[in-house]
Image (tube, rainbow, N blue to C red):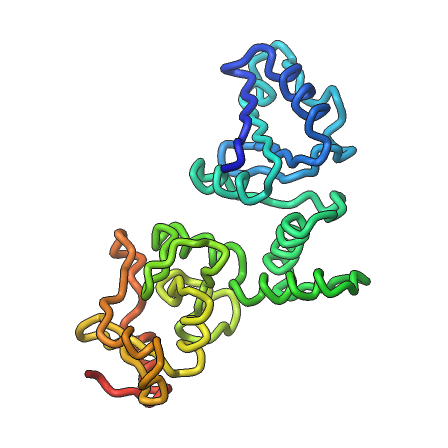
Length: 255
């Protein structure tokens, strides 16, 4: 697991010096600049906006003393840290994406901001592939909510590998209003595909999985009758009317 180094002036009087030392030793790393207790901006370690003198105490006990900087060699590690600490992550748009994981983060920000990512001239196959993954996983803010609600586990298969989990809409995306946790399920990517194709649905009377006859004889047939995992917070339970509408559209009957 990638270590996240946190520099907090309130707890470390020499935090600024420690931060600059970490940056000099890890030029290929990433830095999450926590501007407030609930929001932060993600930069590459060598981002010109960070400078070398932007975080020294002004002696007044003001905002500079309260700010935190979280650093790691891996963006996913910083994302996990941010989720655990209730920090919303924004990406510095001037930090050129140079690695696959960094490109994912940059594209995710663009999807959040505009609903559609324009690669703006980046034509290599890797960029196109990562762009497709971002779209498939679902808009980042919506996906983060579902990951938190379902404790990072697929609602059907229990898979806990985040790289394979999608934010699936029960009622297809029709704008920001449909990005509601009650209109979503956290699903492993293959199960998401079956759900979208109407080959798998949920019986809201038993809150268990229904599979289509087309899946008979396949490995997925065994999912029939599997209890649907639900969030611990009842306020985040998936909408039964939405699930019924999806099941009816798929033409599947309760079992």
